[in-house]
Image (cartoon, rainbow, N blue to C red; front, side):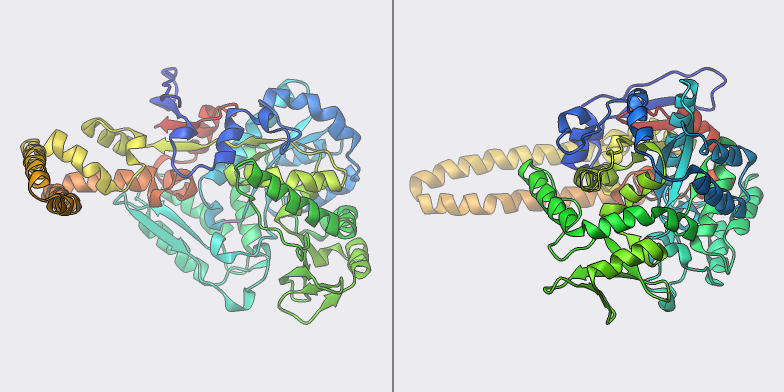
Length: 560
């Protein structure tokens, strides 16, 4: 495990300091992700194109370009049409034009179309992609940053809500209402209803009143309007936040892009049984190596969804007689029929999680993909799909992982001698430390002395009972933990009582926890960017872009 490593910045920097924290010290990390961070090259069996650093990306460009077959002009035309719909910047339009060149490559990331852009890691994914594309351009490679909006996902609950730190520092959840008639629709096709007005109003009631709020409200209200799809609203907001960086936005629901994907869809249909068998085998290999199998794949699985006439997705399952049944409706297909649909009406199909990255990297000349821990874990399984479909496996690098420590939280750190890792528990877990060091050191000492005295006397009693009647000593051994448990419970009640008497202290600890480790997760997995934009303005994205080290395999902490 690495210790936090401070980095002093120039006097012109907006930061007080930067630190890093090893993921070994961060809760809830999978073994596969940690091993990948330590040495991805040691996992070549699962990641055949693994890279140690983004500086190695140029080595794979020749293979990538040699295997890229999509008509670049048709790709660029489709991207221009959709990006103009979102009124993107001139820099983005120029980057789309670059993709027409035979030597152009894409640096790609993606995320679901979460409300108001979803959790903060969406922003960090985009920044990782932008920075590495710029780095490659500096090395003479025609690289373009692309953000794949996962509009084909159909889990509305995952994108319908988000959290902000409100003006009191606590968490406020902002949600849009579920629409029963849209169940099963890809989220990118769901149109916002009037409940979005209530959600926006609730958002700005929660956020602190600052000099930046009016501009932020204008941005949000322009993007999130009744009648607009979730995919378009997400794209509009991302276009405003990253326009000057030239980020190209990609909506895979677009019919023109679906047409371009027809060959890989047809190939996936034709080789579906082989894909499923390979994925099941890979799952067993991962488990044998001590890892989780990631996505559950069964013998009846199929790598594509069927979209009905209403646009709703239905999982396809292989039946005993070899046909494909669309779950939830009375519709069955022959394999040959699905292949014909893939070739002639590909917009009626949608890739599942195992196939999505392969489709993405068929449509785009992807030099590298920036993903989170779950995506990196999935790719250990999905590399088999690339092999079956005879595609070069796209290397994956970990996206930037960031926690932002604001001044109000830093003051709490300084006042009580805390660090970020102290908050990797419930706020109540910090109460003993605060009480003992800053509020009442005498009573905790008495508890310690009492516990020591009780143990001494229980030891004496045990020795006596052992000589007199061993069964009584055994009975004491059973009761001893309960005696000490009740003393510990009383001590915990004392800590809580002391904290309750000091409401200001309790508030400081709870609001710091809500900021940096909300819901027992990293800040980036819960908090929405509007929470920080309201406090720091548009410059926030620039500051993060400036601070992030895309070659770091550690969690990065930015003190504002």
